[in-house]
Image (tube, rainbow, N blue to C red; front, side, top):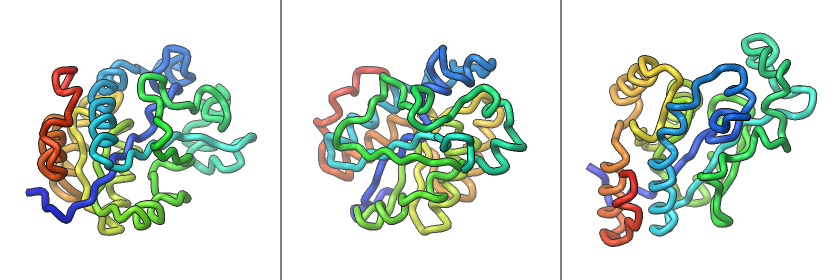
Length: 216
């Protein structure tokens, strides 16, 4: 049961050109972007509703400094192909948020260079200042960046709501395994429709879901 004292924020993780656009560097390297494109309408619906209810919308984009000097072992050892392809460089189109999910002026955008949205960022300070105690997690990859952010959130005593059909992985098996793990050890796994109903009830805005008939 959601409690009246819950103060949520919506997190949108790594929905950027590198992953989603046909010209994104990972798509060009052969990564299947279809699972990511499929969740765009769900995330857009949640973002629009959150804004209408005064709930903070926080985007993350993955990016590195020139020369990948902040890339660490992930870039230099685990995925050198990212560096070789010139992907993820801050200030490039590759790291911009995918156009259909373009942030509004009121939204917050955080740059990260590790899987977790908490690592090396001011996310925790922002959430504390906003009075947020509950995080609604959406985006990609569900089994990597979304999962890492969810775990770090719980370690900092935030409630976690992981949206099953607004998160995605390139491999459905990995996605389903992540949902089972999160649901058992780290928080609640809910559908977009369940989150919408809970937010409307929490905020007393049953008539504010203007996108209810559009892909919920």
